[in-house]
Image (tube, rainbow, N blue to C red; front, top):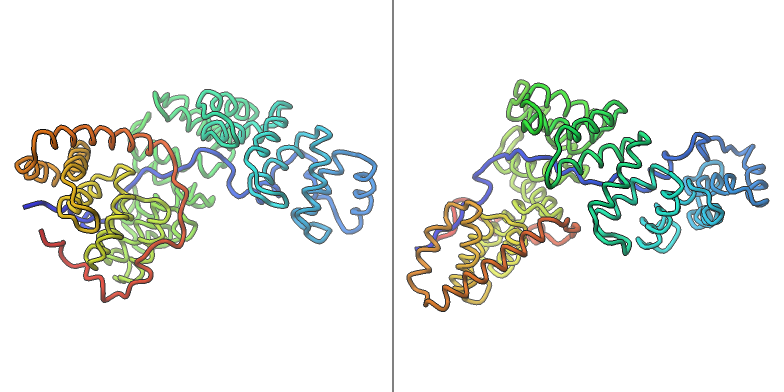
Length: 445
């Protein structure tokens, strides 16, 4: 008799370390609007002054070319024209104007007004960074951290460029530098120092990170009241991860009194902004009727959003619903997505499907390998399943399963160091009728 891992809905609301992404690109269009030198570019452009700005730009004034390019991009004092704006920025960038170069890099990275090219983005960021532009230094650090734009993946290079930007007082670079000190062999005192510097400039992400440190007692003495205050400040400044954690603290009464209304308010706000942990927790709230009226359709919708945002717990939940609906092939596909991210419950359940040939070919070797990996990650059902398979497998099969488990472990370790791009519109549950998914109980063994 094999044991099916209990689906994650039975675990209730889960608290998570907020998924703060290193790299301060945010919305590239917003960067074009807000980050520049003290002249503020198009902020001074009006219908009355645009003619003079055009004349200066046409005469070869690189600063005026940049200002005119930004005016066209954001549609200030002129009709918005992204291609024309990109053209003027290119002229200024080719003349060596550093702010134009970083703006042009943003355009190439987003494909706004130009053909999208991360290689071109990295090229222009480097030109600007070499001239000391803090924004470009920060963005170049991000490109090195994830090996984008044809650059080699290098944490050392990322650290170097984040440091350059942070030393100039750029909050985004300060946050990213602090985040680097939280990685690998962490240096929590340095991390807190740079987070505090960024928070002093009202960086929402800095408040969120500091909240995590005090919530978990990482590098500082655990203090839930302090964590709640930090999350609240970050949330009020608009950080979606801080909103998600603030909502959870209201829901569980951590560092504050329980308040279901405020919990729903902040978790829902974060979920609507695309924060995957909030989407997952909102799904649980609707599924279990915690802090909100129980609503299966809303639960399915938010599980789907979280799953499409690469949350393995949500992907495993989708797989479970599909299993109950007897769509075993797609259930296996979604368990595989969660399993490759290291989610032990999905590994157990995918192993179960392989051990029975449900939705996948019957394969005891793959099943035992998955159970073994899941057992190493603490899945309660793994041990019994391993014991049951070992009884019926040959010594050669057992040896091959051990080798396969090592391969899976290595693949998972590699996968966990990368971020999967969200795959929108792929959740099959949105197409299923509610009555086809009987979610009570667990699949029969």
